[in-house]
Amino acid sequence: MLRKLLRYEIKATGRWFIPLYLALIIFAGINRIFGLIRIEPIQNSMFASITAGISMTVYVTLMIGTLVMTLVVLIQRFYKNLLGDEGYLMFTLPVPSWKHILNKLFSSMVWVIFSGIVALLSIFILILNGDTWRELIRDISMGLKEMETFLGKGIYLIGFEAILLSLLALASGILMIYAAIALGHLFNKHKLLASFGMYIVLGIISESITAFYAVLIDRFDWFSHSATFADIQSILLFIFIPLALSTAGYFILTQYILKNKLNLE
Amino acid sequence: MSMILECKDLYKKFGKKKALENINLNISRGRIVGLLGPNGSGKTTLIKICNELLNPTSGEIHIGGHKPGIETKKIVSYLPETTYLNDWMKVSEIISFFKDFYSDFNTEKAYDMMKRLKIDPNDKLKTMSKGTKEKVQLILVMSREAQLYLLDEPIGGVDPAARDYILNTIISNYSEDATVILSTHLISDIEQILDDIIFIKEGQIVLTKTVDEIRDEEGKSVDAVFREVFKC
Image (cartoon, rainbow over all chains, first blue to last red; front, side):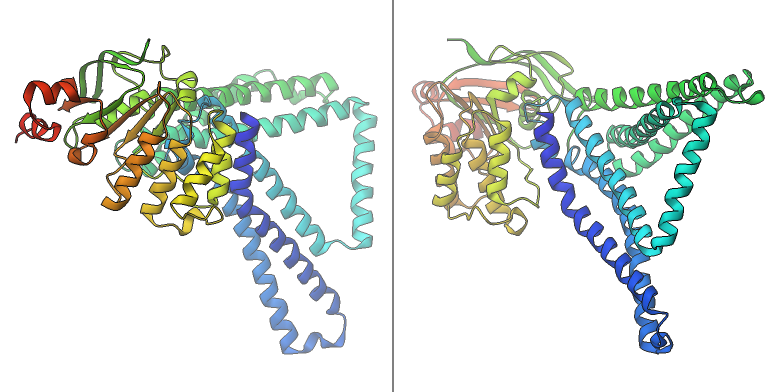
């Protein structure tokens, strides 16, 4: 059932993102072309510079648009599709509510990641040429080699763990938004405003816990000696614990409200 | 045969306000039941509890022997008062959505009914009027071969001409051992199709009878009895 839900979710959201991604890539390409022909004598013509200016503005707008859209769709799909009128359909499907949450979470994560990749790709298109590209590759491989001599083959394990931690951090961030929306749903009036308020409350709570935790960790004096593989492993573990707990906490809270306190308008 | 819907001492409060009070109900299979009462009497609340869209404050409810949950959602086909259709799908896409999630959904029947009501499967839901959307929704709900149909105000928003077609759709599209519960305050329009009636007033059930009983004992129409019971 989760697979079916995901298929429809990606379809429902993709119709916003795919055109935006294409537009972003195309305008990065157009700006690149304007950048290339600038070496020709036409650079002084007013027409060329105005066109170049406009296309750059469009590109920047699209870039900001992608960012805003990712956040708006993330919120709107949860708020409207589950807690709005469409919720009458979604919550009477023979699907448990935790699968609805996972569905929204996974699809949101996919779009956040894709938006990031496409934005980066568009920047590459805009600025990279053969030389800078080779330079970039060389720098990255050199950096990797340096770390490898320092930490051995363990660097690849650390890289893998860092990716997992980033995904977990992303999940935690998204679930915090969902938990805030679910809490806001408990209010009889001004649900959206209440959701914003709840987001701030959750933020304060999690920040305080993190700060307390950081003080606790700090007493162990991690960075006094050079970082060995084992040191990095324990640092990653100490990052992992609060992230895992907050992810689980937000998920359980959201699930509890959707299962027991649902009250669609 | 076992009951399709059983409620025992069911209560629902919103804060201090009692929405349902001491609801005891046994509804058998194969009946068309009218859940009748004025606005705000608790009809929608009761139907929402049957669909797990609300949790009761206390008491028990069983549908086909199960508490509201995944198992009951497989056998209950629900038409809410609200239009729950999204605006980006085509009719054909929402039909396959239903087919995907409900194993009792009859696609052929759905297309057949759409054709009879002159609804183009390639039309987008976005472009439809509210009335047409309600018709699409009713067709989707009645295209399931469910055991219990819960229809909340199915004729409230549509014109009288479409009303007859919708009522016909309801009685001709459910199998013999399925039960249809429909809530409404427009009693005279549906009186002729009902087997049983439940009168609900201020969250309490005030009368449950078969339509034959009402006619034999009281010699009146359901509509006349309703006007008596709910006299302001």
